[in-house]
Length: 173
Length: 165
Image (tube, rainbow over all chains, first blue to last red; front, top):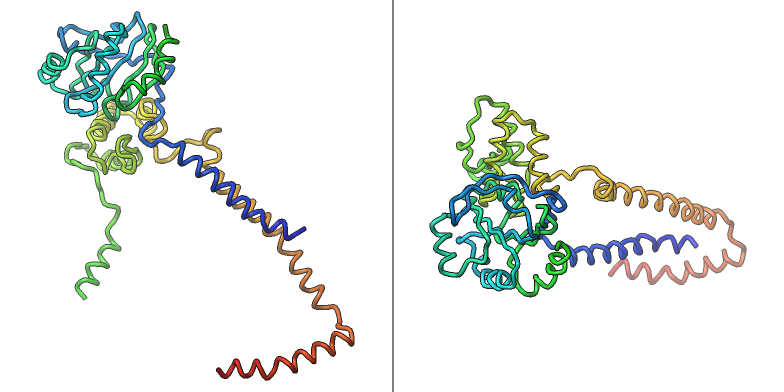
């Protein structure tokens, strides 16, 4: 009977091994959970990239949208740009945040590759980016019509990712 | 000798003050400088996850350092600065996770496992020593004694041989 007790550490060891094995598979180090989900979009006062007019968090209100953080220095942003164009063609509202970028380069980019954005918030110093907890472009937020952040995706948007995000996006309608 | 001396210097080198571009953040007193360095070491860079803000040269780490400096200049306390970052980047930016219900296992898991092991050790050990003393104290029967002597005699020459070789 006592002999059986001796096997408990071994059993615990294996149980922990299995637990950690599952944990390793589950952990995605590149994607951090955002504390902003369920919270209102942070207040900001900036200029629209295209028109130069003032924009704030109130400019977002209305229809549900994707808020896409991008920059011309970010290669992955270029990779996802064509897909953003496709989404915009489907009538999905996309607001851009031009993050730590040069306005002139950004405008050139939009002329060259097309502009899927309703408007772009110019964020040359990354202030809004910091408030949004941005740590690597591209990042995309799902924001509902009341300006509440519902989800966040870090990395490029592509058909595979959109398949997962679309139900969430449709639920905001 | 020279290399030994150089090596011994390593023993005396304090934790390297690794704040990149340290000169960028002037404080008018030593206390605040130390606070800043401490915060930059306690906060984790979200982009390069094994570095703190002091070590990392990622653009986001630089922005966060700037923000820490700005908040400190506004007279914010250490907790407020850390809270500011946690509100935006989550608990991830802290090297020291907060004590909450969901982090209970993280904090106390090792202690629980240790206690479990200790309990197990105590539960298993006394019985096995009891058994040993029990068998040891029982006197041998005459038959057993005779068998023991026989075995000893049989084993002796071979054991001596093995000792020699």
